[in-house]
Amino acid sequence: MTRFIFITGGVVSSLGKGLASAALGALLQARGFRVRLRKLDPYLNVDPGTMSPYQHGEVYVTDDGAETDLDLGHYERFTGVPSRQSDNVTTGRIYSTVIAKERRGDYLGATVQVIPHVTDAIKEFVRSDVTDEDFVLCEIGGTVGDIESLPFLEAIRQLGNELGRDRAMFVHLTLLPYIPTAGELKTKPTQHSVKELLSVGIQPDMLLCRSDRPIPEGERRKIALFCNVQQEAVIPAIDVDTIYHVPISYHQEGMDAQVCKHFGLPHMPAPDLSRWHGIVERIRHPEGEVTIAVVGKYTSLLDSYKSLAEALHHGGIANNVKVRLKWIDAQIFESEDAVHHLEDVHGILVPGGFGERGASGKIAAVRFARERGVPYFGICFGMQMAVIEVARSLAGLPRASSTEFGPCEEPVVGLMTEWMRGNDLERRQAGGDMGGTMRLGAYDCRLRPGSRVAQIYGVNHISERHRHRYEVNINYLERLESTGLAFSGMSPDGLLPEIVEIPDHPWFVGVQFHPELKSKPFDPHPLFTSFIGAAVAQSRLV
Ligand code: GLN
Image (cartoon, rainbow, N blue to C red; front, side, top):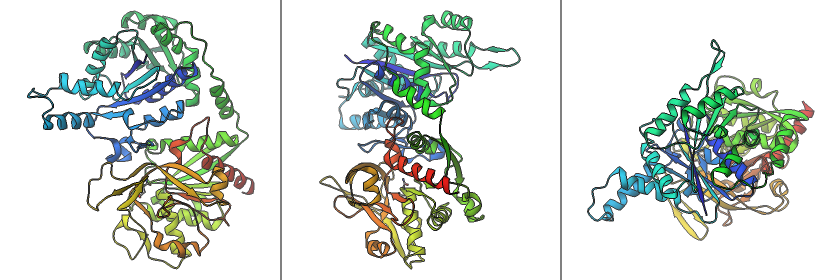
């Protein structure tokens, strides 16, 4: 029997609802339950794929090629359960489905309305693609009170009623602000937020209260009384030093026990949290520190690089070191010499990116890393910039560039219009739709036996997630290989370069895919483990 937990947020945005949901998922999993997490996003875009990283942060890509909300990254990192297309839906996608049905005549002449047609579509989504999961945790994006989220709240209210209390639970995340002049944590915003929820017919079963300090028993009692929630179901969510401590801290506050109690499962054995304790222990007691420069474009909104930052920290956990990230806006190298900013770092990473702005700065960072023997990791756009740098500096192609920046004489990186997905041919046209048309999701890649990456992965055949429209042009392959750049990973048909490396360099690897999306704290991605290992070696030199 699958049970559903709906997680809403109130008072203010950015309270970490995604992390809270992920942590609860991890706790239930640690009790031996099978979990799945999904997110309902109230905005009108069909998916976040067309949104600017400044607006929305990272776009998290699933194996099945969906461009989704970054919270799915938290879900996957905390539970290890691979997310799917069916784990994220937006108002835009719901409406597209409803309108397509209306055009087909499926509503048999009915007037199509938000209730029941849109809410039915939402309910159908929530219950779809569920098989043997014990729990489906469903996070509602936005903050209670937003106009956009109303159909979602109505849909989960109906679901709560249909499923009954033993199969549905409502968890509401709020904030208790501390007012220094009064010396008190304030419960009023929480009370108001619960009132707002009640006005749409939802009585929360549990309140998860964010606070920067312990919540006195009296305040907990007051919240319970005013919000009509049992006192033990008012769970403090106190700020912690690392996100990987969140499951432990929720457990200590009794969250999972309360969830089990709600569903009539009171005698479950305590969860096994040893792997979380192990991770936190390693994070808190590193044996050293390395500094990695991330030379990117969206450095003013670090949510744009959420999975990347986490994967680098996982590499640190694997090597028992703290990873300090130095975020550098690539454009700075257009006016200043890269040396000043990169001299003291132990590794340089150029992440995924789009468009010409900052590209020359990224190329300057590649050159610095290559010439100085500093470990270099290029991801997607960062691989493309590495290839352009090598083409310009070593292959005698000073005009090498990417057609992403406009027509060019030496298109070392070019628009991809045809490729194979398994046995199927995928086709695109220049000027076609932008949404959902990149090379997306998991693709296989063959590694050259004996190469650095084959050693790192320990296998010769891998699968990684992609999100790109351009690719390294294989017409330049021989010329580039003659400079010492090895194409050590290729698509199975041998047509798409997936990995380049410089064997003579301490650590220089560019990958066309996004390995950061699959890294987990308890299962760090081998490329990040190896890169941070190389940075540790570098730190002993400088
Ligand atoms: N802009 C490049 C492309 O579309 C790289 C994309 C990325 O880094 N994700 O191919």
